[in-house]
Length: 177
Image (cartoon, rainbow, N blue to C red):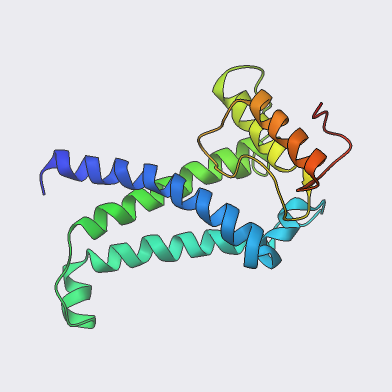
């Protein structure tokens, strides 16, 4: 592969992971996988959450692509030939995992450092994710992505509609009016 194709594959993988993460968050974590995700939405003083198991799932995805892209492993262990893009897709998934960890766990939930952005896109990310946590339970909700954040005013309007229609129970502390 050319260097351009490698970089394009890595970038496409990082971007694709945001859409995969959005779908997994909305339909798995807030669906049949709620048992792992629930403690992320509830107050606790533990250093780790069951929700952190989803990070392991992401790591397995990345490692699996590295395996598929590794000639010695595929040939000697798995009896097949390597698929080079697998290496670069695996790297894109790894980069997304790092970005997710820094933004979601670090910036938004302040698990690793304390910084509250006062303006710009970082503030928008924090606000959007806080609005995601405004619902009680797995039903309804807004802002299921982790890196691309919609306008908080539009998210508040969606929460207001969800509360009025009974689709979601919204915490009293959120001013969704």
